[in-house]
Amino acid sequence: MVLGVESTCDETGVALVRGRELLGDVTATSMDKYARYGGIIPEIASRAHLESFVPTLNAALDKAGVDLRDVDAIAVSAGPGLIGSLTVGISAAKALAVALDKPIYGVNHVIGHLAVDELVDGPFPQRFVGLIVSGGHSNILAINNIATDVRELGGTLDDAAGEAFDKVGRLLGLPYPGGPHVDRLSQTGDPTKIRFPRGLSAAKDKERHRYDFSFSGLKTAVARYVESLRAQDQPIPSADICASFSEAVNDSLTAKAVQACLDTDCDTLVVGGGFSANSHLRALAAERCAAAGITLRLPPLRYCTDNGAQIAAMGSALVRAGVAPSSLDFAPDSGMSLSQTVMP
Image (cartoon, rainbow, N blue to C red):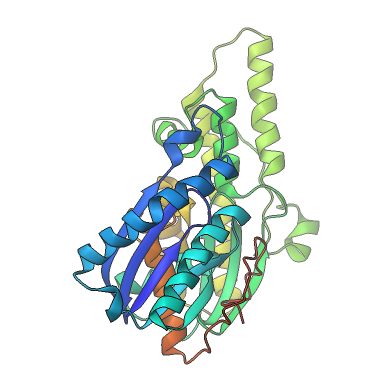
């Protein structure tokens, strides 16, 4: 049984997993504290983790119906993430590992967004492509083994998809965080109303940046469109803007992810991360995967945002693969490589 601890940003998550079975999962969030600032305040997030960890741990143990002494290994997010938030979670996990005399695994939080799908859809195929989409990451990974063999094929050169959605939400005056509000508005708009650009879609970019993304130019195009309407005292068609913007982002994400599957001869695409909750991404990915004969694995909405289950699932995969635990002196790595599954 693996105890997973998540504290990369503003969610404190604790979960317990045995094999591929989730026993208990509890998450506390401090997101409501940032509405007045329009973004995460790292110091506030770190303090919130300090306050939330013990209650969240106890709630997860109660939910699973187990005792701390039943735990066989501990997994904790080692990166990427906010350095202060990571430090709180790692310190707590190390204290538990020492007190219980159990091995500890400092795992890659981002890869965990994919690992959590095993708790829902069962074992992964031998090879698959992973699409990570979140507030901080938009990456395509080639995976031969979730625990030992992960290779990054491409990623965003600037803004991540979730980050771009939040910024457009702020531009339109939507509440924080803007991403979910942009998604909801997009469902009532016309995605063909405005032709926003697709980054890295020019012929010269298709080979050099075959699996890379760029959303900063798209974000700027939306800003200029809104500014031009305001300068002319014209109404802002927020729903159509959100729908057209969403179409541009998700067109790029799904087209390149499906292309990666075809190029690497993989018949399974696994999508994870906070932005994988986006309604149009889920619909467009399902449509394009079905057309290409690719199996799509998408976690339920409850596992899209940061949670302890993804970390426990990643730890469980490492234990099953016979990977050596991390040393007790490992440090948080805010820029942890996406080809590194665990800290040495």
